Image 1 (cartoon, rainbow, N blue to C red):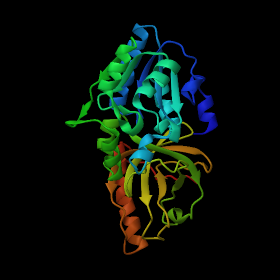
Image 2: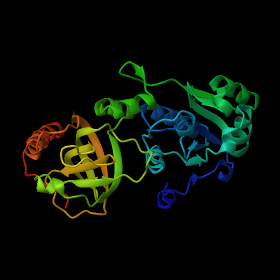
Image 3: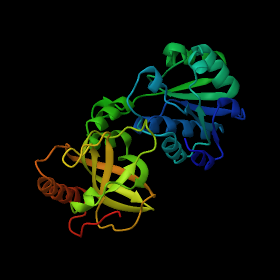
Image 4: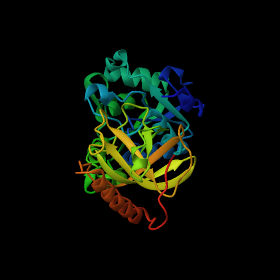
Length: 324
């Protein structure tokens, strides 16, 4: 996480040992995606915290435990994205604990007594129903409730949020994004899935084909990219929302790349934006990435992609633009 992202808010702690120990209400979880289920947990946190005059704290990790324990292929939100989303909820503090080897070895009982009670002074703790904690994920909500009750504290267990007949979960969202189902991901997230990166110089091939593209370099290697394909997107550049199409993949028709790239063709946009930060919000998948018989066939298909994206995004008509 970049230092400047942390410094925007004074109430972010990089260890529970830094927390000042004031009486608090604490929500626990990885919060990857900050999806509608997470949002319900945090609403419960803020509500009970305000009623009891307690400081509200989101307790999570700088490195998602599942990257280590379950080997997931990517994260829905970077640290800075989680902080930004958490800030909007009105919580007082965020603790980003280091998921170190020592922490992984902490027994479940010790986590409650040492971290929640001693360091965070948690009077109320809020978790999802399937929350597990401690060494080997041995602790569950029932165990935590017993330990907290014995210490005169309280646990609130929040039921899962159902979306499309299933409990909302980060794993379902990851699977949806990996196969390009951006509409389903948006329903689960409560917003469009997005990636953020810097616009860098490419090989200019898009411009030669009549569809110049902004090449987006995503700095966080664990950020999950949607599956290869072409997408209708909205890009935010310098505070301006611009519609466009995005290709994710290896560009097999022109020159196969050694790694996956992210290229965005912006509609009605011709400003110089190399080096600028862009947020790409995915509205819908248009098609899979395929190898065309010739550049001319590719251009014909891109024209169809642009027209379809304009319809989906509500921008029919207008001229084609570029990010120089």
